[in-house]
Length: 127
Image (cartoon, rainbow, N blue to C red; front, side):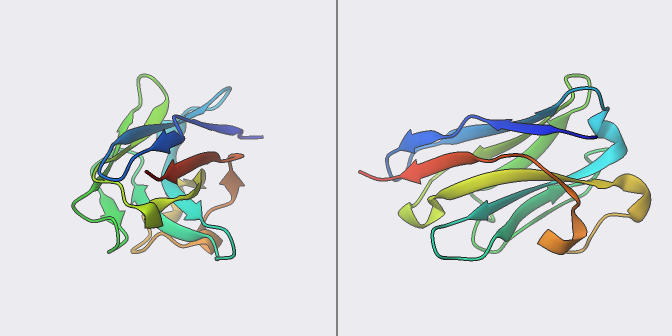
């Protein structure tokens, strides 16, 4: 079974940056579309960004466009989420999730389109 592991979360001041990583053991991530999602306290989990298995296609939630960048290094079996200009409203647990690439690249990152999930990493933006 595919197991994903997120890392890179932490506490950062508003305007700061963090880079999250999503890795897997035993499976090649280049067979999967990977999405980043987040869930703030009391809110539903929402899609942040997705990337195709080749890295050639990406999409972003409007709330993070221009600030976050998703990328992947298939040689390292890792997907990244570079987060810049962080705001307090970005505070959440961030999860990565996988969707088999044969199912196609989704037009939006929807929780229901992804079947394998990591345990999450906490991101807190606060002064």
